[in-house]
Length: 515
Image 1 (tube, rainbow, N blue to C red):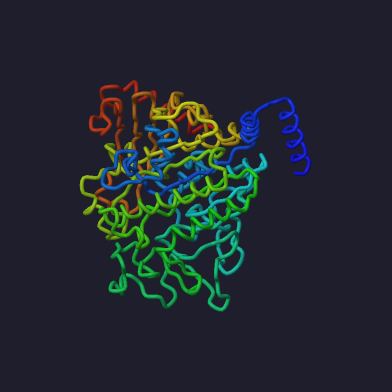
Image 2: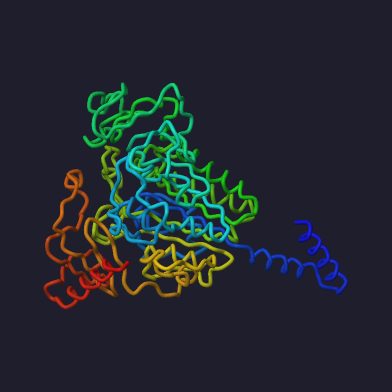
């Protein structure tokens, strides 16, 4: 540091002696700043639909902080999560591989870590370039190696995957254990009140939703009616850990503050922050600052809460002088869902608001709204053209694109399904993918104007069959739609274009055989 200051002082004196004005000195210093390694922040919202931001057409409420990012960067209109549910999407983002390659599906709260910690990952790739890495928020990728003792060090987990720091909701807000996990340990755990978790049978003395509905803030379906914590019944049963319990209303402050603490701790080192929100996943229990403010019930209020959290972290980047040199990616892990197990009036109070933004389906669905999500990229130091981008892009592409961005050469077989879309991330006029695989309970393929949904012959969970508001798009015969003229996917053209069906199905088979 002393040498750098000395050199800087000598340059200043030389420039002054030569009659170079101060404004030029500032320009030279600005150039030096731009040569520093850029930071990366990935905001990954849960269950946010394509139409759930005012910058994407929502009129019932405003999301000014996210909208500001859209105004200052690139707003993508054909960006997609890799899957229509959260665990597969997160798996693909962090590995650069499709989730079907590891049979990654929605996990119970006590599932083992589904990412092989001995293999390359997105955070490990950043560490190879000298970055500090952190994950703060909802995890839901499993922890441990098959049996988790929550009273001891919980590993393998994010640290073994390459994160220097992690502060997690271990699974989801609607699953036990309802505690925070910081690095390897449960926060505020009293060793005299050990935690036990069961997804098989009732344990502990806490009341359960089926027997004590009068204790509930929101009534729930049978799946979500086990152990009650903070007035919310969850999936699974939990005994012990009373002091370590979270309070749902505190999420926006706890997670945001931990992210800010990490940003402050890096002290000039380049960093990558992965911030997977719990909002707007169920149970939706927004803080009183946001409750009742959207006019759309708890779901709408959770959107406002999410926007506020985004704004606080972006403000911290600006306060630290980091914003100009930080690539911010804002998106969602899958499409929207209204009723997802809790009676929070999401459907009844949405009014004219269309969370899917005019597309068909939503979370769990093979139709377009299952994966088509809002995505915004902001990078003041490096965006070539701002505005709207129609580039076809998948979150699975972030791995290879970010490797190019920070100058890391990937190993053979690393991120095999990812494509380098860096030009599209930095230029609204650049092109995207030629074709793109979408995962739900079946596989779909986008190619040019075509959207093909492969026949489905498997089984789905019983709870999915009960979601009559969700069109899951699972049929035993092929479906083919012309997305350019039929965004609602109403006219099945499979019988009319059998050669297209055959070509796209063959393309899926080719992708499946890649390794």
